[in-house]
Amino acid sequence: MPHDLMLRCEQKREYLIAGRRELRWKEVPVSHALDAAPGTIRCMHCQGAVRVHRQRAVDGPQDHVEHRLRQDSVGCRGGIHFDGNHRLSAQPVP
Image (cartoon, rainbow, N blue to C red; front, side, top):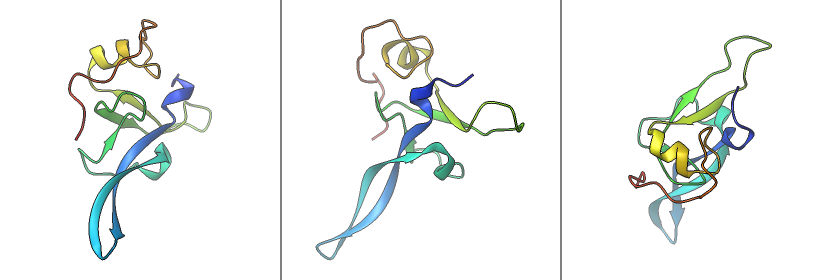
């Protein structure tokens, strides 16, 4: 069962700002990032790498993300192994 805080993530998107194209992180529902390229999505709480899980059965878990590194799951308030001490990822997605 996905943790309620992992139903959203950050996705890197391109914006046109003052005539220049810039990549910026935007918070989105996981269902909007299902086909995102690797390295363009991350946890919105700890900025760590995540993997996307799709809803397979009608009554199964919703689309959600899961930390790739257990140490991120332990230190992130959105992780299923959270130890109560929130910290940013040791290997954040730039």
